[in-house]
Length: 306
Ligand SMILES: O=C(O)C(=O)Cc1ccccc1
Image (cartoon, rainbow, N blue to C red; front, side, top):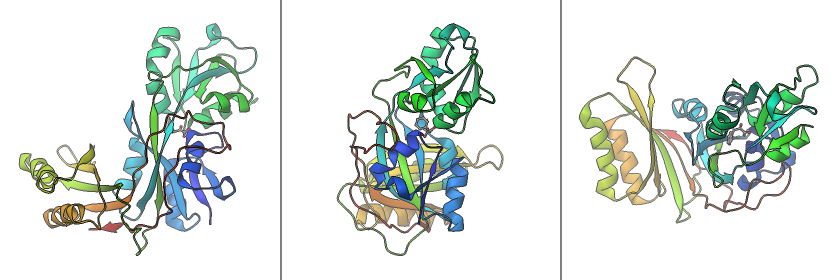
């Protein structure tokens, strides 16, 4: 069964597949995060790999929102990928000819300082991924020398574009975390001793609510690794908190936190326990080449609505 990923080929998400033990022959590109997740929901794919969080720009909210509220999918693994950005134009273009930039919003945000300095008047057009931006700028049908794409330098060259600026991201050490998502499975992969757990807790807006939730982690000494609030979309004041912590639900401290959060609010969603990825210093490789960053184990945790 294939694994869906945010494509097209050449995306950073494709480069992250090897770190999640997905072989190139098993991977199928989808035009968006939602489409990749829907492929898992419908059974067209066994799993999906989507960008989740970046060390410079924070959460990829499109992925978080598409996953957090449904409760019908779970996270089974994660990997970290160093990302570097370059700017490229169709052959014949130059920096002075660029008036429009296409890329993914997360790539744009990480290159904002460089863009403000070198192309302060360029318009930004959103692409569904960095590789889609490269493909659109290279497409002979709409290729204009006044339009540039931001993606990995290898991807830009692979699509036939001329790289005119490299390392344009704000941080050379930027890292993106990607997650692998699957349908819930009754058998949860056992704890490895270095796991992460992800859950979503709806809060009604009382001042004490967030305090009480955070107190659960203090009470059990479970280290929180991230806290993200997202509006529930039902008027002001309603929020869901995406909480990530160290540990595994089958270990007493995390199991006890999740059980208490569930008692507090039955709509708490447990999204999975899976091995934590360890950072490496290897830059993003060329598309389709083997990666060196890795994650142990092949996993089938259950995701359950608590
Ligand atoms: O995978 C891609 O190519 C994306 O566009 C998502 C993304 C954007 C920026 C950093 C990492 C992943």
